[in-house]
Figure (cartoon, rainbow, N blue to C red):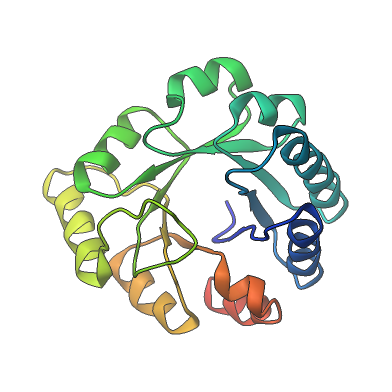
Length: 204
């Protein structure tokens, strides 16, 4: 599984598509299509074009929230928030071979996600971020450390956890040292897609 995920940004269909194209051009191999509060027909168009682009670049295409849309566009999987469809429902709709990721904010969330057998966990936020409307409590490095320590104390294998929430280049090594598998980046890559090469080098 790739260690660097790009979460798409943009207020319009054109902006979203352009940001995804730029990220793919600069070497991203995992795109999560995320476009909140948009008309359904526009979101469908974005998911269709994103799937085509990702296939062309041999990158993974994950749809945020919308399980049925992930199925209809034959995306590689779906990412679900804590208040979205359950992992079990998504698995029944998408089948065993698709990737299903789940959001978490606390140790109990992470344990819930492990029990639900999701393929990876998006844990955050690391810091305050403007890309999410209803932000969960900020974790900081200490929050991640406490959650990883909590799993070890319970003798639970550490799953593939991705840090999210205003992650910068400088944050990656400290996160890896804590035991975090990868990072999901939105704003940084949207503003500066050339940074993908540097991020990929560190993420090995």
